[in-house]
Length: 301
Image 1: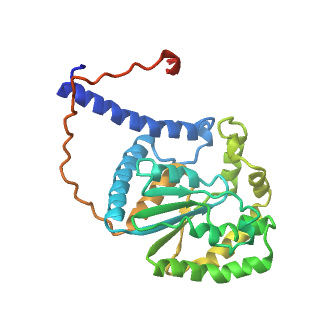
Image 2: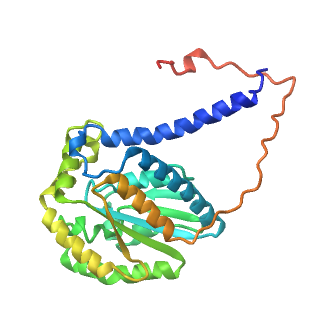
Image 3: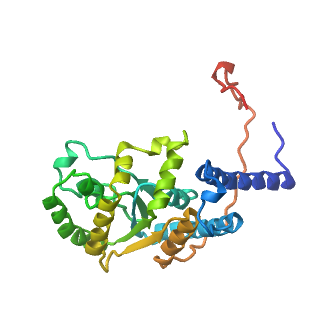
């Protein structure tokens, strides 16, 4: 029987776990910065040390928000929209990184199939809406109709007009049912999208992020601009307003978005009772069966 770790050993183990958690964030940051020379980064970019200090502080607040949502049976849906490569996925990663996926989940729907195209337009999104004590993050949403579907000709102008008539009442209906609706638009410049697309083209780890639709959207920048401007104008309602995140600097965008999100909910820290780890039961007749060698993953590293 192996000896239990001493207090000093236990604290060393816990400290290492904490370092591993931070390494996860550093890994994500390294992936984001890979292949981007310093001179190509936005002027006045947030210093890395300050960024991490603020990010970890905000993530601790997100845990408090999560606990409050569960305790108060709150329902929340957060819409993330913006041009391709605007940084929506990056902020979603940082929001969900340390949260319970059973409470906070991300929904990123593919293009509708043949059956879904014959349904009421909002129908496939309704099934993913939160129940009590849940937060749902939509990585793109029903606003596809006002953006990519409209610009790429996947729907008619009559269908777009019907969408604009319906979506304000649809969102008011969600709010009346007790769902808090938050909508973010991530805004980047023409030059910044161009730079990020080039980074993806030349980085094998990011090429999967580029689809033929993304490349076509680059060509139709002005069409997307016109569609976005009309979308914001016609769907900015008191019950579910749009919030625009300036996203040329990815780090500032993440911190600003999370800070703003926390300010939209009157959460408070939910008291936690003391937790005691029970002693493991040990029996004389217990025998651990050895794992066959052929089942063990080779330790290459």
